[in-house]
Structures are given as C-alpha cells and as structure tokens.
Length: 410
Image (cartoon, rainbow, N blue to C red; front, side):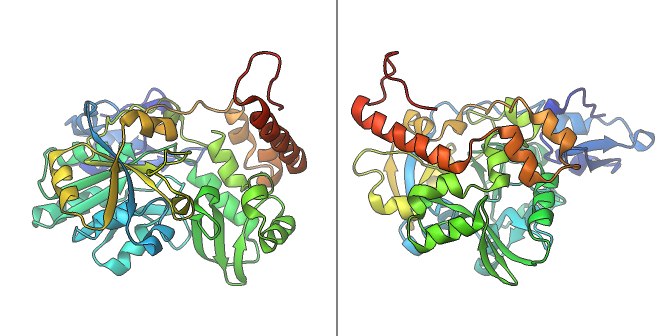
C-alpha cells in the first residue's frame, strides 16, 4: 500500500491509482491544490503494485550520452504557432496517435489524445499548470496493444509513471519529456482566472504568445469581449504595445501575476524543488525545451528570436531512427553543456521561495493582485526599468566583472 510520509515523496503522476486492481486509490487535492493519492484501506488487497509502479521510488537510470541538437521546424508558421521551435509538431506528424496536455472547458489542464491533425492543435503550446492524468495511461496501453503508434508527451515524472505502468517497452511507443521548470498549483490558476475575469468569458489561452517575439512572449487571453493580454498595468502596457516599444519595456510593466509567482517558486509543487527526474531519469526517447540565450553564429540567428528555437535530446535508438526519417526539422548538433548553459532546468531543480508556505496560508483570504507582489517584495516597475537601464550602461562599460569596485545596481 502506497504511504506518503512527506509531500516531496509524490509527483502526482497518477500511476499508483491507474495500476490498482482493486480501484482503492483516488487522487485527492490538498489545501494547496495539488493531487496526492488517497487510499481506501478497507478495500486494499495489499498486492504492492502501487509501490512498484511509483516513479519516485523506481525511476530509470540517466542516459549517459544523449544526442543533443538545436532544432527548429522548417515551416516558420508552425514555429510561430508553437511554444518553442515546433519540434513536437514535427514528431507528431510522423505518428498516428498523440497524447499530451490540453485545456478543458474550465481551463484546467488534463491529458488528452489526438487522432487527427485537427485535434493536435489542442496539445500544442506550453501550459504552465500540472495536468491531470485521468485514464491516460490506460488509453495509451489500449492503443499500443491494438498495434497503433503513440507519441506521448508530458513532464518527466509523467513519462516515468507511464513507463512503470506499462511495465515493458513497446517498439511503436515514443515518449517526449519536457525540460520542466516546475508545476504550479492548479488551484491558484483557477483562482487567478476567477479574480481576473469576473465579467468576461475566456475563449482561448496562450501562455507563450509570440505576437511580438519568442524572446519576449507573454500570457494572452481571447475573451468574449475581445483579446486581452494580462499584466500588472494593463492600460500602460496596451499603450506601450501600440507604440511598438513592447520588447524593451514589457518585462517590467507587463509581467503576469500568475507567471511571476510560478517563476519565483512561490506556488510550485513541493517535489519540484527536489525533482528526482533531472538528468534524464525518466526514460523518454526525446527531451524537448526552449533554447534561450545568445548562441554562436549559425546556431540561433535573429529570425529565430522571433519564431523560436528548441533544445532536443535523443536518448534511444528508436528515437534516433524516427528522427533520421524526419524531413520537417532543421537540426544542428550541439553539446549537452551548451543545452545546460541556456536551459538550466535540464539538470537542476529550482529552490522554493522562502515565503511559499505563507502564500498558501493566505491565498484563499487575500486577492492575488495584492498578495503576490507583497510576498515577492518587488519594486514598482519604473524603478526596475531604471535599474535595468543603469545595469545595461554598467555592462557596456565594465562588462560582467565583479571586482568589488564596480558592482551592478539592484
């Protein structure tokens, strides 16, 4: 019988509930909104399968030398419609059935299958909320046993959970793990939507809107009253957009409350701060993520800054064979150290915010628009903008040296 002694022992993958023959385990949300297994002990038959399938207790060994690429889809329109470089779209075009995270009617996130290219659009683009697995593992196994090819995409813990659930390798199963920063609370996401869209009905959500550039993508919404890009200072931000100054000033004016809390580790799942699936410990054939940073000439050109570029790691022979047949991707070999340099979450976990527990003790009683800035203790955006301008001048004069005489401004 699965027993939790600490919340850092569970990633919420749902594998234990899916494998239970007595159906005595169900996933239940805690006070922070994260799902954990709840066992009906009176129905448990003590078969031990829930413990054997748990990816936190049993995860694959890391792959020592995966192939690493800077990758992008050759079709720029596909890249603009994707979160990064369009790699998932290119891989999905080769597979008949796909599985990944999709929005539901209430804008929560759950795993969903796509059997056609029209359905595939729901799985594209990042969704910075932990997805509910539901019956995804069972559906994948049904498709595989029927001889259908499946591409399953998810967080590293979900990939490891699927692998343990299936118990064996299928030659026509391909898995793609995301380079995962962390997973934020679904309850905070729902509360954010409720507080920000009181009189509007949401029609579409895009966590990485590339209207201006992939390098400064932002969270946007389509509502029944028209498009809306949500930030701390909506009126000022919309004026900046009209003046085409978005790329320079938006990071200071136009940061979204939910994304701020997510990136500052204020609302993320406890295990994400000690993730046991880093360094390839998930068994996926592919690992996908953003490829941020200033790359050498020939790797990331100015056009890619707008449309996006992906980091792609290939860890299995069948993954290599699939990639060799792909004609939609432009690949440039890079080193694993380069990938790590420009996407640090490949190997290391973020540290929790020191006021994380305080946030969850207060978030049901106070508006997020006041609570999040107060706990993050951020300066007003004009002061942050001036500080960045001063730092920019400093870097031009002194470079990045910190010799004790000339220090960057806070």
